Image (cartoon, rainbow, N blue to C red):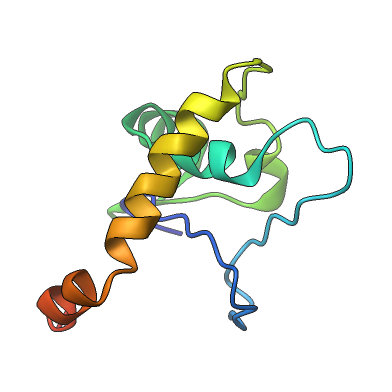
Length: 106
């Protein structure tokens, strides 16, 4: 359940609570996980979630079944979105970014 889409890419094997949905890349997968991350964090996706999800207060509840119906285009241009996601991940994982934003959610 969320009011804004906040999907995360993890390479450090974090543990998450039961309220999280994990998407795990399989061999010979049609979609690159970073491509999916870029799409799922988009304004298009947020609008789609609010139009198709179950409204709960000021947010929306998206379960696994609903997430599986999210429209993802099969394209050979996945690399363009993946490259943008890589750049954002590099910036947000830098020590300067973390130090400047560590108290922003308090």
